[in-house]
Image (cartoon, rainbow, N blue to C red; front, side, top):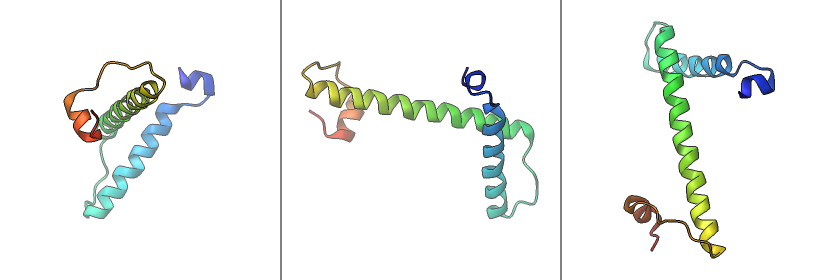
Amino acid sequence: MFSILLGEDLWRYVINQVTEIVEWIFIRLGILDRPSVLTIQLLAVLLLFLNDLIYLFAVHLAALLVLDRLGNPIPRPPEWVQVMLDYE
């Protein structure tokens, strides 16, 4: 949807960025080969999924902190998040 609204091919942009990262890693590791297209695409999907998870976590964390201060609490986060935040 964003590709249509922006008039840019965002998938191509993501693939180019991931390709550059993987080639840099290959050079650092001394691997004298090019990564396959399938490897690049799988890594791009994995990184997009990871980015979405981090974004979702950050939005929910911000909502928890802001809405608690406004007096409109939302359900408590899982125990492991409470431990990370030292939140009671």
